Length: 230
Ligand SMILES: Nc1ncnc2c1ncn2[C@@H]1O[C@H](COP(=O)(O)OP(=O)(O)OP(=O)(O)O)[C@@H](O)[C@H]1O
Ligand SMILES: [Mg+2]
Image (cartoon, rainbow, N blue to C red; front, side, top):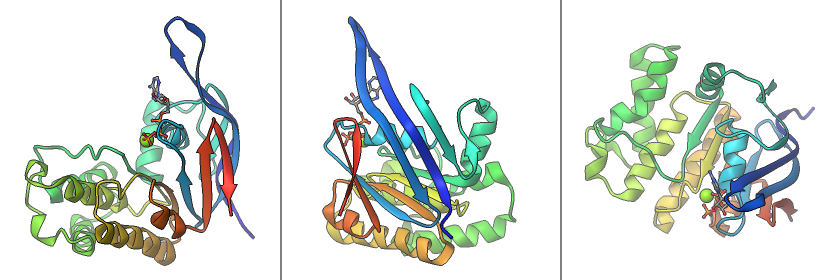
């Protein structure tokens, strides 16, 4: 039987705007259920609220109205530190901006979420990091600092960082945005392979039709509403 891993019930988000009492209504009553191990693409015009939607699902921001449950946990009302731990344990997040720490090498950046967690021995995690970095073509950049990497290389390192704890769910915001076509394909393929190998649920925001086509379920966000695409 299918099992929902992310449930949104009537979720709305309105950002306050100075001198406008209505504010900016970005999400308007979105209800959605994502099954465990599903791969999902979210497309939509710039400014339509795709990042806002991911931020809601990951508990990085709170909805104005509605309820969200992730991996059996209702997000609203969770304490900030519990939420941070929950996120680190269950979610891998690839941000639109990569947020690598400039003072740490690629390898150190990638290992950061595993240090917080300390579930596994360091050798095991390092071996996994090495393998993943090889899969995205960064084997020769492991000891480089982000300042010496291209935008696309930073993005690939950020994807590996999101995968290092083998999260149940990966949320990726434009993970292939700054990559050329063939590298984008390699990265999207890696995400799909993780889905196949480990049953990782995958939610990918993308402007790329090609990447969207690789996902089982496709949604389009426009005018605050989410429509499923055939
Ligand atoms: N913290 C905030 N405060 C006020 N307005 C915001 C905030 N974050 C986003 N917005 C506004 O909400 C709308 C949706 O933004 P969002 O970043 O979710 O769009 P997006 O679909 O991810 O766009 P893009 O494809 O360009 O990344 C935009 O008009 C944006 O200016
Ligand atoms: Mg965005």
